[in-house]
Amino acid sequence: MKVLVILYKGGKAAQEEPRLLGTVENKLGLESWLKGLGHELIDSKEGPDSDFQKHIVDAEVLITTPFHPGYLTRDLVEKAKNLKLCITAGVGSDHIDLNAAVDHRVQVLEVSGSNVVSVAEHVVMSILLLVRNFTPAHEMVERGDWQVSDIARNAYDLEGKVVGTIGAGRIGYRVLQRLKPFDCKELLYYDYSPLPPAAAETVGARKIDDLKDFVSKCDVVTVNCPLHEGTRGLVNAELLKHFKKGAWLVNTARGAICDKDAVAAAIKSGHLNGYAGDVWNVQPAPKDHIWRTMKNPLGAGNGMVPHYSGTTLDAQARYASGVRSILENYFSNKPQDPQNVIVGIGKYETKAYGQR
Ligand code: NAI
Image (cartoon, rainbow, N blue to C red; front, side, top):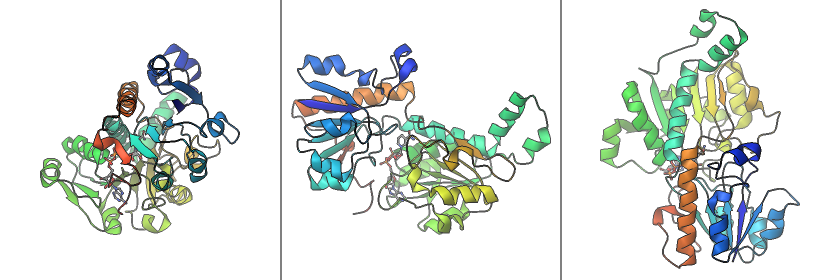
């Protein structure tokens, strides 16, 4: 069986650090195991004339990661006559055309839960670094300067603020859990799937049904829902008008959920005090992507990093082993863990990628 793995080149780091499993060099730790079972493992990079285009035609299994994704478009799904299973090494399968997968009876599985704590920690860190104006303070000391007032004029406590999450699934809920001890004024969430009452009570989170109403109440908004037809461009110029002036926005879900130019304009005008996250509308982000350098009127408010919150070494160990379990089940015709199945044969098996 042909198993096609689309990973990114980890270079020197991946040669020196074998725990960088999600790289071409280390192949999720699957190479010798798969070859030992007699399967063909092809690793390939993306691009118009790449091996991806060549090998997808007869691959039966495709493994990708969201961090440096191989984009499986409808066109490629149609060319992939032998494709039966796509596995996302991590969480978030929007780089696969899921509707095309449904139409062509290709299953799509993720390693659900594998990196949700990793992302939730990053969200809390990002909220804190924006609210406390951390990045320009660090840059100041590196420059050799010392002007406390320049930083303190835009530094706040998280205590007493209203924080809300768009999406209260695995990550969103873990963010709320981690924020509870910060004594925020209120924790809110917006999601069409309500939290179980006991879970909502444990974190003290209130559900708001209208998105404009929700953002207008929040000092900090964090985005933790998948990218799908219902969330692409959800945070756009119109919605941003309803944010509190000076609010902070953290998005570690998917870049395209927020409108690139509308966010950059809101930061530039100071309507948003800061934006942080690790996900971009195109990955790798072009060198001149406005989110790399956008700043608020005080020259701060940017907490952007490359897509890595869900790929800590701890997370890589979990999603690599999860990919192996999915493959083991597939090879031996055993049922998959239902929580991993995004698209089953001919239909969505999750409610998280939009209401259908
Ligand atoms: P999950 O499936 O546990 O939860 C997603 C939640 O979003 C569900 O409760 C769902 O009802 C809700 N949702 C969907 N559409 C919505 C909408 N229109 N409005 C409000 N809520 C909506 O997923 P999990 O594990 O929490 O992951 C969420 C997303 O985070 C992933 O799909 C992925 O895009 C992103 N992610 C990012 C990572 C990173 O490294 N930056 C790593 C892992 C996930």
